[in-house]
Length: 142
Image (cartoon, rainbow, N blue to C red; front, side):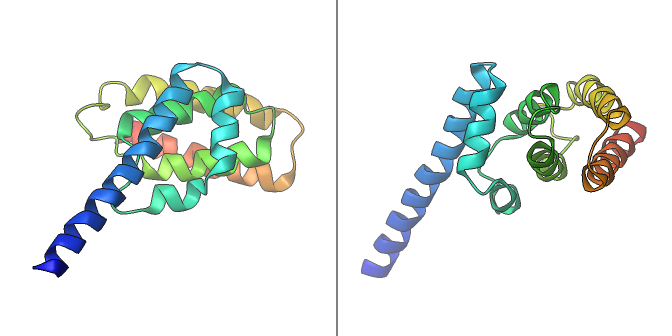
């Protein structure tokens, strides 16, 4: 009986922690200030966050995060490209909540990445940008 109670308590605590991540990103994204979003991304291990099961961020947050990071990709390109890669891999384009929004946002992000590729960038950034573009293109073609 005590074990069941402790397990429920721990589950509740973990749920609250995961909810706080979603809440924090939602609040940052609602400010429409990429510097706040970038700061928040730098404060967490975004790669680990995106790989968690269950993922603590909802699909709408992931889609908005991808969009906002792409807007300002020319600043801190290496970091943003890595974050965008992690986020793009976590997006489920078939999710009913975001499905209608995925094509136009992915097209916008693709255009911004294509523009960034025309600018002088580090070779590693160029490769990473191409990878994200392939991921986005495969979603758009499916």
